[in-house]
Image 1 (cartoon, rainbow, N blue to C red):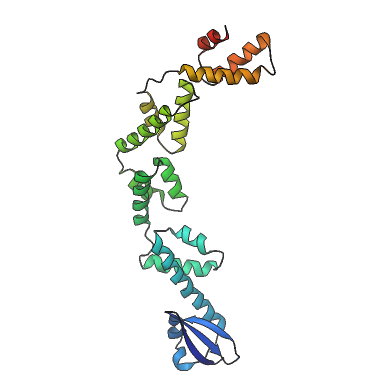
Image 2 (cartoon, rainbow, N blue to C red):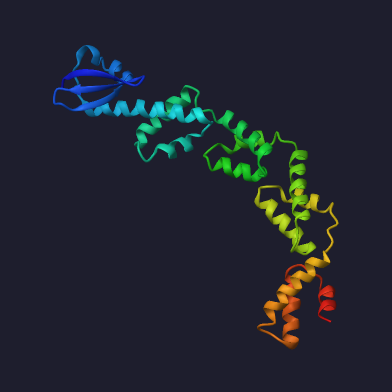
Length: 251
């Protein structure tokens, strides 16, 4: 198959017209690697196009990495729909060798951003990074450099925010919710409990009265008399309110 003409297309590509009137676009690397400027002869077009896919993906990957640091898994998932596995892995191996993919630098940057800019704790950050197929020992190496005082400070700020904004929970239920929410965010359970123990959270009478009225209005549609009292006590105690307080209110 003979090449009839070349037409420059962009910085590193050419539109190539063949003697069968087909037109293909090739990267200059492919043209040079196969000595096409001199021979103007294509022996295996499938092989040529596969090599062209490699350079197309390589250039796209470099541009993709130009916006932010990425992991191998992120790049693979981003391009896997359009490109085959072999081409993807070949490109990923090359950019890793060339230093464009650097897990060490990625983890260092990711941990710093999460600690300084997010509410996520140690174990949430660890989980998110392991889901990106990064070695756990490398992640822990950087997470363990973060001082306990930093995690405690983050826990304290989150706990105080929840305490100040509380408008519907009893003191005991609020503590359980703080523990659950912060543990879900990846903070150490012992650290959370240590921080919460420093706060003397008292039941707010307005919150109790508001909750009581809400529960009473719902249950009174189904129950009455002693059965209503039992249901009220059970429901309010399940929300963390004290038995004596509930009994007094019912009276």
